[in-house]
Image 1 (cartoon, rainbow, N blue to C red):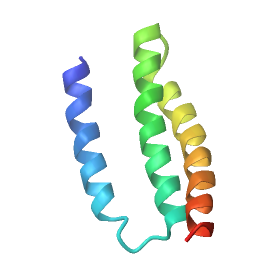
Image 2: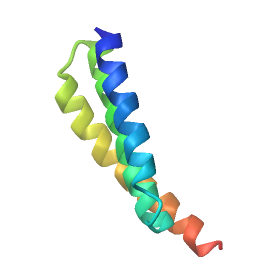
Image 3: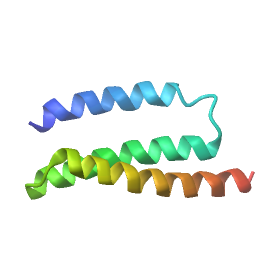
Amino acid sequence: MMKKLAYPLIAVALVSSVGCTNMSKEQQGTVTGAGIGAAAGAGIAAISGGSGWTGAAIGAVAGGIIGNIEGKKAEQNQ
């Protein structure tokens, strides 16, 4: 099951990283954080027996918020 889920997630991460070249650090942080959060949330939900989709949604929101904050900090420190 995890192999079936891992390959599409890796492909999405690679494609989205190429699309981030014209984004600000804040935008890059938001997108990256959302992607990492979604993957982590789905994984944690799958391990704990919960809904993978719900875990991915919650993880994406939390990761996007944290990524946005970190991206703002990185932009301000330039």
